[in-house]
Structures are given as structure tokens and as C-alpha cells.
Amino acid sequence: MFRILLLSAFFLLSACSDQAPTDSPETDAPNQADLSSAAPKQATAAGAAIRRVILAADPWCPHNCLAGALQEGYMVDIAREIFAEAGYEFDYQNFGWARSLQLAREQLIDGVVGALKGDAPDFIFPETSLGEARITLYTHPQSQWEYDGIDSLQGKTLLVINGYAYSPELDHYISEYTDDSERIWILSGPAPLARALQLLERERTDVFVEDSAVMSWFLAQNTSIAAPRNAGLAYEAPLFIAFPPENPDAAELANLLDSGLARLTANGRLAAILSAYRLSDPDL
Image (cartoon, rainbow, N blue to C red; front, top):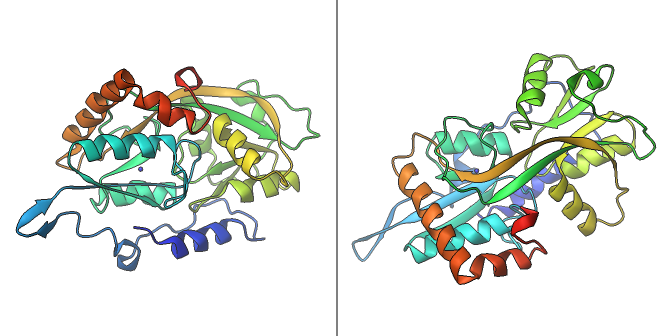
């Protein structure tokens, strides 16, 4: 799981402030002003209903990037092409991940981009994934620690992002120790990766969890930031565009993605979209 770039910039700056993260999520409640460009989802022109799909997520490039950017992410590009062919207007917006899930459940948006099934198990998912997540543990460059299962996190402070699912094992650990700031710190907002790397580089936290493709993309775009050390792969999982069960069109939209993806694969458009992000099917 709109073009309010000032709001996105506000959250980005907030996520990169000098305040230490807390052991509880930041408030991510929506307000009507945030959604002024997203509502109503159905409008009329010359008496005819306009079909519109609104998707949202926090920037998580290359899967889904900053709304309005030259490259909005391969998953967004795929969705836009599929829904446009089906006669839908398409809108992609950025909110924090937990907020995006909330807005979807409130039917203020239609779905979220870049979801693992663990993010929202009750959501409606297409049969076919659009990408792959490789959930990886990162440390300060000089650290020698290696991830070897949950027990290896003993004595370490793990930095995570509010609302994210990582793996069944990590998700259980995070849930169990959410209120223990010696074990878990939680960042919120639409773009917390830069802030997380800052904390890691300053050794104010020990371990950070992130998808390896997202980390590689971010570092390639931000060459002045010191690369963290890869301390081991925790989990691999498919990535989806997912729709809340409250959305009466959820099954139809999921089916459109499945049939559209098969068409884009057959006609070569999928390969062309992925190549723009220096990706190919095996990379996913």
C-alpha cells in the first residue's frame, strides 16, 4: 500500500531529525487535508463514472519510489500500465507504511504497494507476486556480528520500521519486545532509511533490518552515505500489491493485476519496465 510532496518532505525531514527513535510508534493518524487530492475515489464527467485506483506506500525503491519522481518504482509502473489498459485512472501516493495500511482499511485508498503477506494477512493478494524481498540484517561497518537466528540478537538493539513485516521469526520477536527499548527501536514516517543508517553509523543502534535491493538502490543514489555491513540474510518473500478486504473491488483489482502481468510478460513490456531499474525476472 495525492501528490502532496510537501507532506512527504515533512515526514522525510522528521525521520531524519536528530531525535533518537523511541520504543513506540510515532502517531500516523490521517487527517482530511492529507487526502484532499485522493477523494473522492469515484467522480463523474459528463455523467459518466470515472474508475480510479489509488495506491500508496512509503518510498521503498526500486520496488516503489517517491511519488511524482521520474522513476516511481517498477511495481508502480507495472500497476499503472495494467490499470490504464483496463480503463482506470491511476494514482500513486506516499504515506508512512503503517499509515498506508490504515488508509486502505478505511477505504480512503484502494491498496498498498510492496506488501509481504505478513504485513496484512487479511488483505486480498493477487496470485502472482510482482517482486521479491530479501530481508537482510545490517550493522556498523566495523562490527563483526553475524545473524544466526533470533538467539543471535541477544544483547543487540534491533532497529525496525513501524508497521513492516520482515519474517515470521523476526515479527514475533519484535512483537514480544516492542516495549523493551534495549532490544527494539521503531522508526516511523514515509522515508526512514536515511535516518536508520545515520543511527547505525553513529552506533546508536546495533542492527537494522532492510530489503537488500532497497539498501543497494539507496546507497547507489546516496554515495556520500557510508555503506553498512551485510550481517546475513534473514528471509526471502514475494512482494505484492494488496487490497483491503473492506474494498468491494479488491478481488477484481487483484485479478486485473494477475491477467495484466501475464500479458506484460508475454508481450515483453515487463522486461522493458524492469530494465529501466537495472532488474530482470531472476533478480526478483
